[in-house]
Length: 141
Ligand code: GDP
Image 1 (cartoon, rainbow, N blue to C red):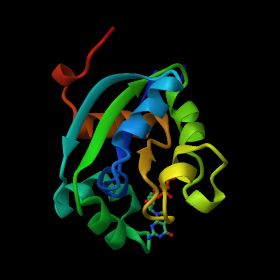
Image 2: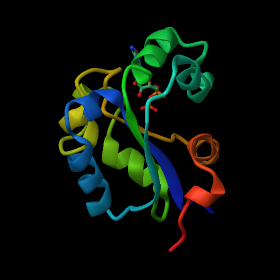
Image 3: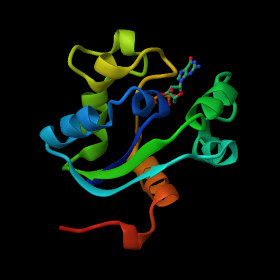
Image 4: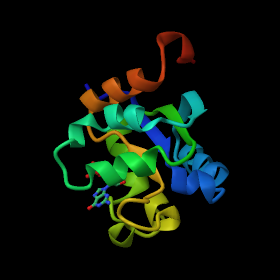
């Protein structure tokens, strides 16, 4: 059975541009429930650990620098089939290729500065949720 949750991050570009409220509203209106949330400013080493799966990719260093460039909002959000549904809500990695009305299309400005993160698999959602939150910080309804 698919996870009932995924991990999202409102990235430094969207936080700096003042889009936290609008993005959270889109998430809630799409039927997700926020079960954990915090604002953090990751160090380069923390961002590097979060994106360790991308270590070999050419944009890894830039990505780590960007993700540690300012505060982010991390959240665990709940819905049936959460990983897939959230990927649909945020749209393609490159905002120019993201569908109309998706979060990245609305608030992303480049393939790197694409406003939000969403876990790409159930297994990664579990790992990423545990990276930011302890069991005590996760609410159950
Ligand atoms: P996602 O699952 O849609 O977030 O995409 P990926 O897992 O492929 O990439 C992770 C993150 O790295 C993306 O969300 C972007 O912020 C960044 N990224 C992806 N592709 C590129 C690229 O070609 N150049 C740069 N600078 N950043 C990229």
